[in-house]
Image: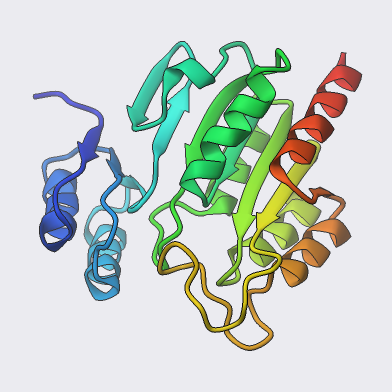
Length: 232
């Protein structure tokens, strides 16, 4: 058909197969919003993409998708809360906080270049680092907002990348400061194991990399507005 993107929202038992099917059809960009895909299915699908379809980019699963305001929207993010014109790029693990990040900036008159919800499952197709690298290379993006949450090591890995490879200002908010260890919060990826994956550990790593760390979403928006106003 000549399609260059596929949007997948099929039920969890069939989603991994649908992802591979789209890749096999030559679609270079796949967005999967389906929640509840078994972790083993996700891992198998991701490994097949890496081995057999290395030029295919998967966003998700269990994500709100991606929106470049005024240009393209693939997923379930409302265009009404986004504002075209840049200069902020947003990347988020949390679906709901993705929407709030957009709203916080838009109501202050600060537009976005692109907003990417990478999803919170244990096996994401696109990582924080993938998006940070893209925003660093994008001339229209002059500042970056990163929304993380408890569980895993993605934020710590992002902090290391920011420290070595990102020249643009970054603001972050990490959800789950009061989350108890061992309890899943919202989805499969948001769980603290022992001393690993805590919000404080992530905040400390990002602060050490020179990132502005906010304590709530509104504070993150305000910090970004201040940064943008100083860019001009």
